[in-house]
Image 1: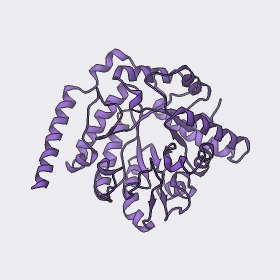
Image 2: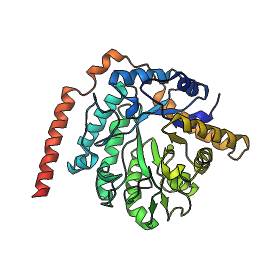
Image 3: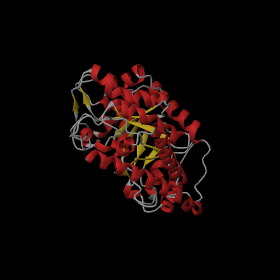
Image 4: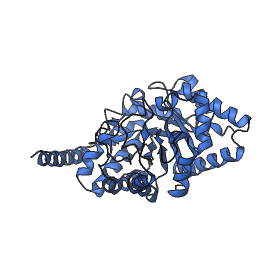
Length: 362
């Protein structure tokens, strides 16, 4: 059985799975699929798509991932409960309420077969000019952000959806967007330890199953390589922050990577550095990445021992969380999404948030 495919998360092209996409998932034993707005029309269509993806599974199901943060970052625009930004949620100063938001998210995602949410954002909005993070963060200081990340993690993971803390080692103080450029962080290690790392430490203590590695050059960690390709960054997360679960890269198709590295080479560098899973929004580049890993294995650039360690970590998480897979029964979905209770809840918290904003403006 091909183990290397488990190290990949790929996107797909549309709202249904093409025959050649299904063949790639099954033949190469791909570990996961990430879904975007172009993969979504309705909850029933989403569930049908997920069912077709899972037909390609081998021993355990694939990770089915999405960015569902609330606010402006949510791929499934209709049919699901719409949440305020996490910055606005943070203004309510209630971790209990935050847990309830994550529970609703988890219930709705699991109803459609999504089992991994790239949330919470553990970045601190400590640069007011940072538009890429901005109100995706819970707050502008580490204390506020740290206060809520564990609530999201527990709300997701106790209700059937794996959680991912992102974007390590902290994207909040940057001005550049790694989708288009390679941001550089000039903070000292002491500053990082006193601020940026603390929400991630809180997430790790809350037993988050994934941490996402950002595409940033952080001078204090590695002045030459982006953290997603830097052994120093992964060693820091493993040894200093004591994280022993799965590390996934941010999308390897962001220009921070593709403008500077060839696809197969970047894939090998990320695994060599310490990533467990490398993420691609398109299957075209996922195929190229897989060829890069195969070449690294063939030439023994990456030793079998490392591939085996990574594969074992991935299998351990899948065995714990995904061994009970059942296809989604589509006729039942409508009853589970955007319920009257969740609409009432959102109305109440939205009114509270508006009151806070009005008081701030006075």
